[in-house]
Image: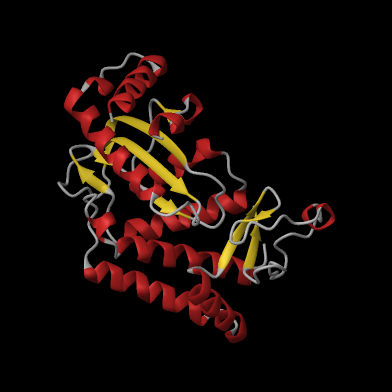
Length: 151
Length: 113
């Protein structure tokens, strides 16, 4: 599932965001949603963050939400060399973002299963630590694909 | 988009979030879901719900009880709650999401994606 969701046009190699909200806004851009839907999804993501940061520590954040305005499961991966203060559990800046969004009717627990796969993939990437050294977008994408294949 | 539809979507998105946050499966993924944060989300839900016309909210809650949700997106002219295909003349109309509509088959409130 996660391999199918990884798309080159949904990778942000060098994120510019400096704050949590800027990061959310930057991450939803590659979804190419209409302005109306973009606002709804951004608001849902903000609400999700309000109940506890999705910054799970070790430089990883997995912002996620379901929304009525979405018609498919999508994943956006972002890399921030400088790191973003995302109120992570360990208080450390986040360098690797996985944005997962899905429609509300995504069959049963498929969304949660994918969320679990994303979390495992993120942890493997951190273990390898190679993602920060990637020279360009192609290399970063290659690393992501390799790790996704191992999950 | 109609203002009430926008509120119903926000309500539904919060309902989905609450359902996830309170499930063991979700907690096992390692996301923090403190009770005080869940209460905060419930408060947000109440605020939105109180701004929705009573009759519409009543119908939403009734549908939620029946189907597990009160509003469903229509994707590629298909109601994602009952999978009924909308006729082309309905699916191609230009005033979508400008007023509250219901699926003629299952009765759920619909949002045209």
